[in-house]
Length: 243
Image 1 (cartoon, helix red, strand yellow):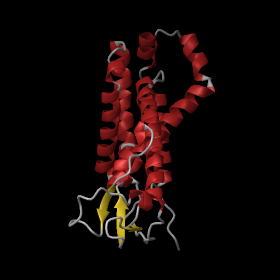
Image 2 (spheres, helix red, strand yellow):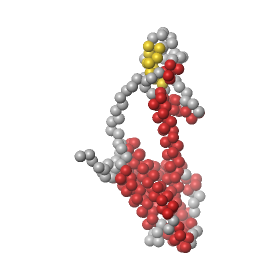
Image 3 (cartoon, one colour):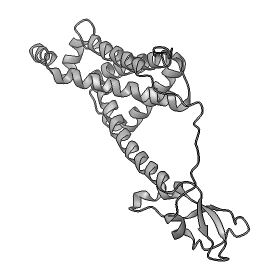
Image 4 (tube, one colour):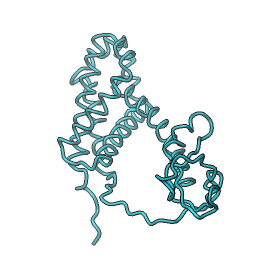
């Protein structure tokens, strides 16, 4: 459970950074995407240009986005121009276009909740006296009295439940992103996500005591497969259909 929490907390940090960058990128797209009418400084004739949003997003981390034209109705014949129309394009209102997103899949929440509960419950059994509590106590260095006191704390249970839920949502997001479903695809996405987290935090994981590493790595493997199988297998099944 310790290793699984560690991995998913790393996922939360990485996810927060990626989400912040996605918000910044989306704000740039809303500000600069679309064809923009300008008056060409070379011939004083109307033209339509497009601002390179990808380049602007890539240079955003330097403090302010660097703008450049990526397409123009006078190109490719005049593609070597000095882009003096850029200031006009940045101020101009873009042409409005209707976008249709085809085949987009939603994230279904009920399978995610079931998968998170299953992973949490497996963790409770895994660290109980029925399975590996004695070995876990010895590896961590806790007494029976200390463990009994920890069991009645609310915060560890809430933390582990939140970690399982976060990982399950990560798997569901990958499935929706790749337009996949099914038990095999769910397990594959969960293994890929778990493997990426393990690789990113391997330096800290390798420093765990061997006995604790074996217990936690075994649970992490079972939890990853369980979450992937449930989220993938029930990806679009446990949902309310419109009448």
